Amino acid sequence: MPLQLPVFVRRSFRHRSTRVTSEGLQFLIFTLAIGIAAINTGNNLFYLPLAMMLSLILISGIVAEYCLRRLEFHRHLPDLIMVNHPVTATLVVKNRKSSLPSFSLVILDVSDGQDLDRGITLHHLPAGASRLVSYPMLARRRGRLHLEGIRVATEFPFGLFMKKALYQVEGTVIVYPEITPLSETLLRGLTSAGQEQALHRRGHGSDLYNLRLYHAGDDSRNIHWPTTARTSQLTVRETEAEEQRRATIRLQTTVPASYDAVFEQAVSVAASLVQHLSYRGYLIRLIVGSSCSEFSQGDAHLYDLLRMLALCERCAPTGEIDASDHHQAESSEGEGGTEIVVQSWGGTAGVQPDHPTILINGQPVIGGVHGV
Image (cartoon, rainbow, N blue to C red; front, side):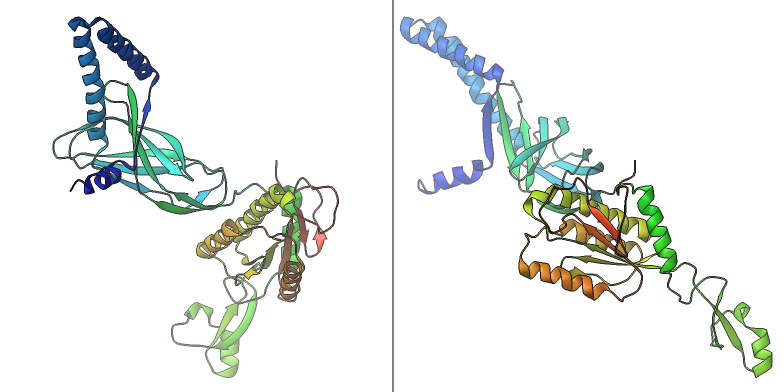
């Protein structure tokens, strides 16, 4: 049993930390002075306040520990988080103690070993009660945002010490790239290229696409009566979908480390292009390095493409990677649709560009990529 006591103490307090506040430091110095005076003089009038001050230090530690014990946290993060776009997260805090309340709780998020102050403070949490609090979040970088836990702190009851406890409440969410407005020059280039690369297929429209025999379930309003009268067979009219277009967006990932900032801009531009074309009904395919998606459309496909961009990584230039990118460029040709290439590095030594380069069907876009 004596050998098990140190293990129990370490397990109980391994997620605890205590810091002396400025008021607590002054109190400790004053306590030390009273203690020295009591020892030097032997006067009982010094021992009485010394005992009281030492008891206040002990009570402060015990009460703060009970405030931090038996708390339960449930974090709820939004499904869609983008860089530099504020969102609201929610946190459920429950006091699982049967009789003792908790006071003056300051709640912090823990990410990458750092405490993130969200401005959450609970002045009073009764025993058995729970509170739902919301707080703003602003992600500064794309990729996986991993929250390691929640650290709760309190200075109750006397403000002498800041005692903290760590609760392992892990959470991971994908942070999508920042969506920025596109320049008018780029939008005009996309519009003209899309008109040239329109895909002819059946769908809702006014132009004739095909005539075929009537099948059970077909709309009777689509029966083509002149052909039906001529052939003595029910024939229906299929229309051609209006402005159905395809686009392939290719992001270059072979970029030196010195171009990292421009590469992040290129990822943001690619995400903005994906959203812009998706909202306009394009069939979109995304090529990021050696990863390639299928042609599709819709919100689910849009989120899949944004996830690809959120998790993509820059690769240092090598012969194999360059050959892989070249192979992807060749394989994307001949598929039909608009070809959009987002480059952050030209592959030659020179002045580092301030923004990515956009190529639409092999032609560079002049005039920038971001709107004002």
